[in-house]
Amino acid sequence: MALSPKLELRQGQSLIMTPQLQQAIKLLQLSNIELTDFVTDQLEKNPLLEVDDRDNRPAEQRADDDSGSTKTGEETAEAPSAVDTDRAIGDSANGTEASSEIDTDYENLYTDESKAEQQTRASEEQQASSTMDWSNVGSGGGSSSFDGNDLSIESTLTREKSLRDFLTEQLQVALKDPSDRVIGVDLIDSLDESGYLTGTIEDIADRLGASQDHVQQVLSVLQKFEPSGVFARDLAECLSLQLIERNRFDPAMEALINNLDMLAKRNLEALKDICEVDAEDLADMIAEIRELDPKPGLVYSTEVAQPVVPDVFVKPSAEGGWKIELNNDTLPKVLLNQHYYAEVSAATQSKDEKAYLTDCYNNANWLVKSLDQRAKTILKVSTELVKQQDAFLVHGVQHLKPLNLRTIAEAISMHESTVSRVTANKYISTPRGLFELKYFFTSSIASSTGGEAHSAEAVRFRIRELIDNESPTKVLSDDRIVEILKGSGIDIARRTVAKYREAMKIPSSVQRRRLKKQLA
Image (tube, rainbow, N blue to C red):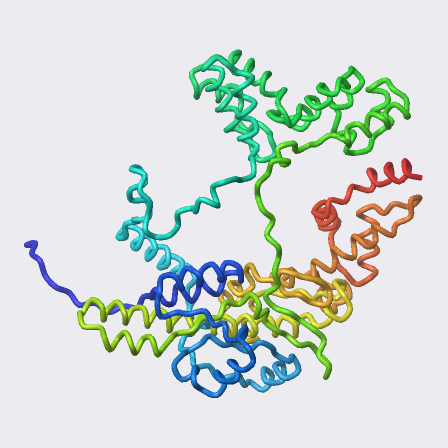
C-alpha cells in the first residue's frame, strides 16, 4: 500500500473550557480574601474596571446615583445580599428559581470531572509555555521591572528576624574556620520551623564531602545556640539540651527523658522505680519538663496568622426561620465604566488599539457577571445547607444530620463539583459559632433501631460527652461506650469508637484511670 498525504474529516465531541469559563470556576472556589487580591490585580490591568465605592459616598451623591445619572453609564456586579429561608425553601419546593441574566451554566460545567481537570491543566501549560515573564527582566543588572511589583524603600527598612537570621548571627561569632562555617550554614538550612534537624549526619557529610566526625563536632557547637533546644533530632534530645543548659540533666532526669512514652501514659509507678526517686521528686521533675519548650524554633516564626472572615451570616428571622446574608463588607464590588469605554472607542483609530479595547471590555464584562453569579451561587448553596441542618442550628451538634454533596447538588439542581467548589475555603457564621461550610458534610452511622442515620460528628460529640461526664471510679472502656451508644440507637463498632477517641486525642480508659487517680 502506497503512503501518501490525505485529508480526513472526523466528527467528535470534546469538553472545551474557554478562558472565561476557567476564570468563573476559579472565582467560585476562592475565599473572599483571595478574591479581593484577584480583583485588585484585574483593576490594575483593565482600565475599564473601577471600584464601586458608591456606598461610601455622602447621602446626597447616593441620591443622585439612584436618579439614574450614573447607572446608565456603568454596569456593576450586584447580588442578593440576603435570603429568607422560609421563602427560599418554599420556592425550591415549588420548583421555581430566580431568573438570572448570566449565561454562565455552572450546573453543567463538569459533565466529566477528569476531562475538565485535564483540559484546565493543558490550557495552563500551553499558556505558560507561550508567554514570557518580563517581570524579572533586568534583575541581574540592577534595573527594576515595570509591573509595579518592586518593594518600596519603606517596606525594606525593617523586618522581623527569622530563626535562620538569629542562628546565622551566632554562627559568625562561634565559628571562625571557613569549613566549619560551611557545615554550620548547611545545618541551619536543614532545620524545620520548630528548630529540629531534618537531615542525618551521614547525609550532610556525604553532601558536603566532610567526615561525619567533623559534622558532629560542628553540630555540638550549634546545639549550644539560642534558643535552647535547637538542632535536636527528636523530642528527647530537645528537652535534654534545655536541661543541660539549666544544669538539671542528672541521671534521674536522664532516665525520665529516656522514658517519655511512659510519662505520656501517666505510668508514674513504673517511672519511680526506673528513676529511683519517690513520688515527690518525680512530681518536681515532671514540673520541670513542663516548663521546657518542645518547639523552640517557633519563637522566631514570622508566619502571620490570618483571621477567619465569614463569607455568609445566618441569623434568626423575625418572622421565624433563618435569614442568610452574604458578607458584603468583604465582597469586592467593581464597575464597568461604559462612559469611558464609549469615549475611548470613539477616539481609537488603529486596529490593534480597537482589539485591545474590545478585549478589555469583554474581560471586564465577564468579570462583573462572574462575581454576580458567584455571589448568587454561594447564597443558593448556603440556603440549602441551612435548610438541611436546621436541627443543628436549633438544638446543637448532637442533632447534626449526615450530609453529602450529592444531596445539596440535587436539591438545588447543580453539579456536585460546583457545590464542592462553593464550599471550599468558605465560612459561615451561625448562632452556634463560626464553621467552614464543609463542616456540615459528614458521613453517616446507621441507627440500631432502624431509624434515621446519625452524623459522624454528632457521634464524636456524644463520645466526648460520655467521657467528660464519666465517674473517676467508673472509667468507661470503649466496649462500654459502644453499649451505651447502641442503647441510644447508634449502631457503632468498638474500633470506630477507638478511632474517634484517638482523633479527638482522648487517652484510653487505662490512661484516664491512672490520671484520675493521681488527681483524686
